[in-house]
Amino acid sequence: MIRQIRRTLSSLCNQNRRPHLHKPFSIYESILFFSTSEPEKSAAPTFVSDYLTDRHNLSPTTALKVSSYRSRLKDPEKADAIINFLKDVGFTTTHFELALYRAPCLLFSIVDNIRPKIKILQDAGFSPSDIVEITSSDPWILTRSADNRLFPSVVALKNVLGSVADASKLLKLCGWFLRSDLEKTLLPNVEMMKSCGVPSQQITRYLLVFPRMFLNKPEKLKGFIAQVDEMGVERGSLVFLLAIRAIGSMSPESWELKLGVFRSLGFSDEDILSIFRKVPLTFTISEKKIREVSRILFETGEANTALLVSRPELLMLSTERRLKPRLRVVKILESKNLLKKKPTLTTTCKISEEVFLKKYVFPYSDILGDAYGTVSSSVSAE
Image 1 (spheres, one colour):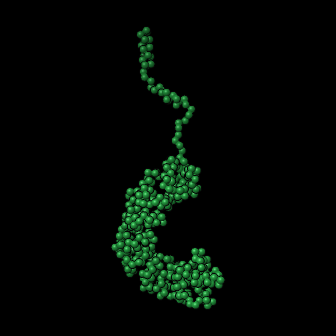
Image 2 (image 1 turned 120 degrees about the vertical axis):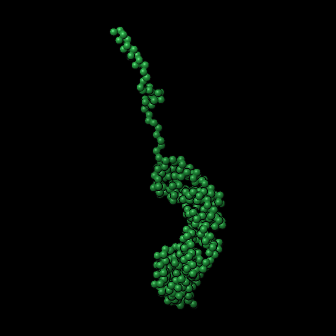
Image 3 (image 1 turned 180 degrees about the horizontal axis):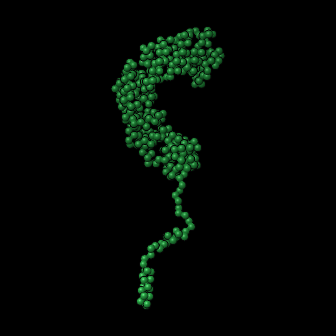
């Protein structure tokens, strides 16, 4: 009996020496267990609209535009860095609003992505004011690859135009020009035009006036040149690039519509070719205007298809601002026998505004009244 009791006690002692199945609380766990405070949470994302209007005083219109791109801002400090960097570059609030409205993604970029692109423009010789104007009017420039796209395009543009001043002039009007890969469009197209006998100065002049024409794929431009050759336009002539531009601006369907309009007005195919060779841009105006100008001139009794073939530039004139008021003035003066010699139709339509006013309007202002409409304040009667 005594032995059995000893064995039982020994067994109980051994059980007490076994390791616990659960670890005891550490001091840290004990504090957490008894603490009544909640763990710290990360800051909630900021609403973009509130950030832009409250923190940077931007307009609700711009804030709404950017919010439509992304409604919340995870890291306002990064956005602050973008804004501060652009301010250092020279951006005003107006410039920044314009840039954000056109490219909302700019707010969510990082300074290290934008800085190299600004530096490329600085190193190329663009002035601070030029850089601000160019990049705010087309901020997508700042989203291009610095090394693979922006740098080679800036170099190409400077080489073709020959100066930073002309490059700046173009980009202020057409910042989108740098979105294209100029090494694959502008450069081969310029070389193709030179091979057709077009002087470099003429290429530069037309690049500033018709920049889109130079961004066609070279294969496409080659096709336009072939069509211009078929039309009989002389390569290297003053109208050669205009002819390319005219052909490039029309689809085959539009071209056929123009031909149909001219034919319906009594022009032969040879007449049409002659008009194109002299003033190719007559084919860039609408079919409606071709009909309207022709009708107005034909109704004077002094014009026919032969006149328009010899003077196709008349088709380019504004009906409301030039043709109608001038023809009305001459008709009134003629009816009152106030003209010693009636001007020809071509003279009436083509002379400069200043000459027409001084010769046919100001001397007879009491008689004409408002027959000529509102006279530009830039032209005086003296």
